[in-house]
Length: 128
Image (spheres, rainbow, N blue to C red):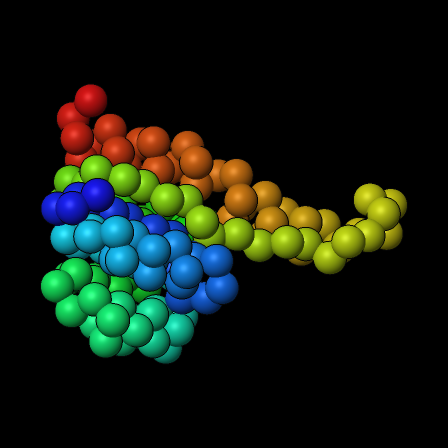
């Protein structure tokens, strides 16, 4: 892990924050964290700097369901060794006949579409 560059989406809270800290503890040289809210991302960055000052952390405000800011963040960060697609959203647990379809679609946009967008971004950055 030493010297590796890591990109982690959804790094501001919960599991994502713990993944960021785990990669820093393992010796990652640089970590880019993406998320929708600047405050939690900066708190994660602060925790890394306190515990693992040798790890560089970059914060990118990006809704993972929107490919434009994700691609901009990827271009700014440059190439990476590891990509962790942690961002997620869970729609309310309801029967489909009564479910809020906008909420259900939001879950789809956050949990499924980024897989294809990240593949496209990776292809552009690495020229695969």
